[in-house]
Amino acid sequence: MSTGSGATASLSFRDAAPMEWDRTEGWRYFTDPGEVYEADGAWYLTSREAVQFAHRHPELFSSARAFDSLGSPVPLVPIASDPPEHVRYRRTLDPMLAPRVINRMEDELRQQVNELIDGFVERGSCEVIGDLAKPFPTQVILTLFGLPLEDRDRFFSWNQKILEITGGKAGEPTPDQMDAALAMFEYMQGFIDRKRLVPGDDMLSSVLALKGDDAWSNEEVLGLCFLVALAGLDTVTASIGFALMHLSKRPDLRQRMVDDPSSRSGLIEEVLRLEVPAALTPRVTTKDVVVGGETIPAGSYVFLVLGAVNRGPEWGESANEINLEDADRGHLTFGGGIHRCMGSHLARRELRIVIDEFHQRIPEYSLPEGFEPRLVWPAGTFHLSELPIVFPPGDRT
Amino acid sequence: MRIFLDAGKCTGHGRCYNVAPDLLEDDERGYGRVIGDGDVSDEHGFDARRALESCPERAISIIE
Image (cartoon, rainbow over all chains, first blue to last red):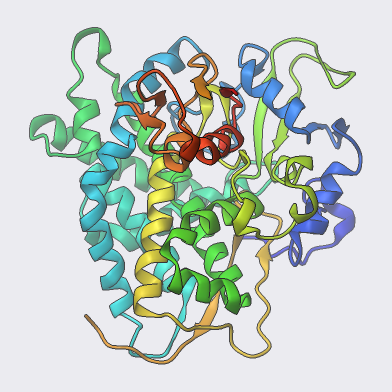
């Protein structure tokens, strides 16, 4: 993956954004040119009004062709679809990812986080991304789909390779990326075939069990598997990293998490608002569309700049910092409209479980002297490459 | 005070029933719905305003 050290002159408008060290400056870069504008062949919508207009008009801002660059061998279900297919997909999938369904997974997921913490708690140090933020969401997806947890590391590595395609760069996938996509494809197809014959108590089996007019084709089921793997994993990895990054830098907030569990949900919302993993979501216009006084031609590639919307005027003077007292003002980190992230309830629960269990086991921690966390940029998903922390050693459970 | 949820705007973010669990609840799809007839007692006035502000789709309204 690119580390952003290349010559700036060759970067696109998007990739040249100053994101590595400071997202305040990074999002200002996107809002400075205006609410609706074109740069380097793509259009950018940066205000809540413009973005929500696009969210509410999927017939004008299509998703069907917007995710081609992800390099999936099958159309991603349901993100890369429009109504009426999209309605059919979400009617089936939303109840499978509703909070009351996730409640049933919670005890198991808490135990998994504690086992991961056991792996480093005696050491007095860890690298948050590799030791916790990568393995946990991967295990959650495997658990959700009824796949063996032993497959965690190879599942994650396929995922990472495939996602390198989405680094905001044009061009054909590399042979490595094609190999990873094929490996994941074969892996998923194997389980689809097995679970058709012997269903388990998992989401994949539930989708395969649909009958008659509701039944999904094999390609649709594979498209769902790819979407959940590509969208549901490294985004949560990124958010766990960002949450522990902000807490490591702010001892007052960290202590508040320990002393007052009711403050944790506000902290999670603020980290989601300020550090958006999928911060520029794509659409393709189906007609000439006038937004914010500008005419976007039919067939244009459009970015909805969610990271900029989340620092808009609703947040007043604290737009660029964590404010637990006045946190929840409707950020758009999970998108909006019919394509609202279908895994949002699961993602929030994963974050809550990590914050709860981590502070229970490791209440005091900080960044190593002189370490400044740095975003990987340019990249498709906004994320940290590493986050080392140090803490007084604790005991295994 | 009374709270309303516009089902035509709700897309299931689930913020309202998390910040105001005495006033709104989740349905089987994870979408929000008003509990009872939406009457808001004085003690829940703050929660009602939090629900209104937290909705990314601006689907909640309040009549004082």
